[in-house]
Amino acid sequence: MPPTGAKGLNLAASDIHYLSQALIAHCRDGDDAGLEGYSDRALARVWKAERFSWALTGLPHRFPDADAFGARMQAAERACLAQSLAAQTALAENYVGPPC
Image (cartoon, rainbow, N blue to C red; front, side, top):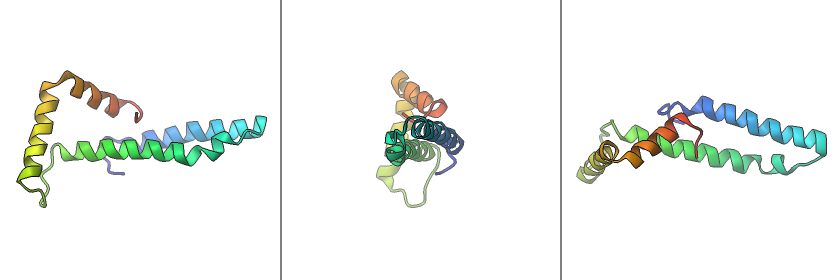
């Protein structure tokens, strides 16, 4: 996980929450559904956070292997964020909240 967006600790807290719910259901009720689905649930959150961090990393940085197309796409993404309330809202929701 790249550090962009600081999602590592958020994911760890989320893991604790979902794993504790699964363990409680297993111990109290013998319900293993939460344990059986835990990896899929955790990986879904991880990949969404990874997507966000990857996209956020690409906004301000110039990469040596980027071609003219990549540079134009990067500029277009920054312009979209500057001009679109919807894009700004999506960025803010992904930055401060748990991965969607």
